[in-house]
Amino acid sequence: MATITTNFNDRTVDYKELLNDFKILLKNNSLKFTIQREVILETLYNSDEHLTPESLHHLIQEKHPDLKTGIATVYRTLALLEDSNMVTSLSFGAQGKKYELGAKEHHDHLICTECGSITEFVDEKIELRQHSITEQLGFKMSDHSMQIYGICKNCQEKK
Ligand SMILES: [Zn+2]
Ligand SMILES: [Zn+2]
Image 1 (cartoon, protein in one colour):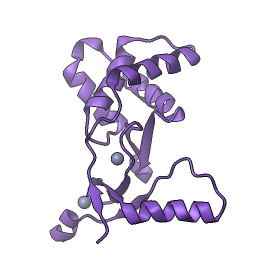
Image 2 (tube, rainbow, N blue to C red; image 1 turned 90 degrees about the vertical axis):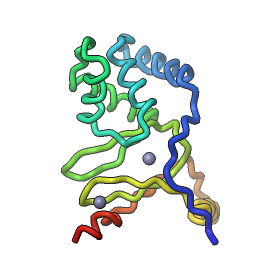
Image 3 (cartoon, protein in one colour; image 1 turned 30 degrees about the vertical axis):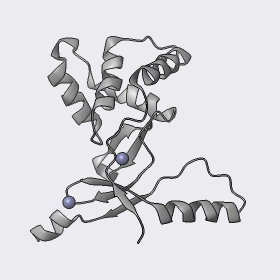
Image 4 (cartoon, helix red, strand yellow; image 1 turned 45 degrees about the vertical axis):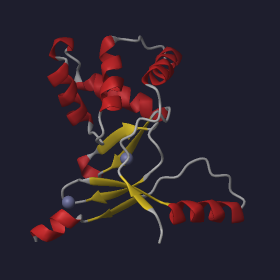
């Protein structure tokens, strides 16, 4: 039997390390390190969900209403983090993107196009197969992502 592991909630990277990388990233882009920007990173780090910019903004507003973090700051910070691969996104077509920290352990995704739920999984055989394919084709793989789109069990049962 192939081993399929689902849902990865472990934080594989130390927050201090991540914060340090973030500070360097801001500096390299001539941006100031602000508490609003830090809270964006911190909220992403502490969430086990894949978040839309809107839901991330909502979480921040709830926890730190005093900071008045604007949605535009959330969008810009996410774009910056994604450009530098610190954050990865899953595309939901017209519904936009959901983000998660790139520092999580590698995994692939099942995405429900009805309710937007996401299941994370890793299958050893798929992982190994990808390595042997790239090896055979003389390709040096640095990363891969796999998204499977369809309808989740819950949504199928509702019909
Ligand atoms: Zn669903
Ligand atoms: Zn994920």
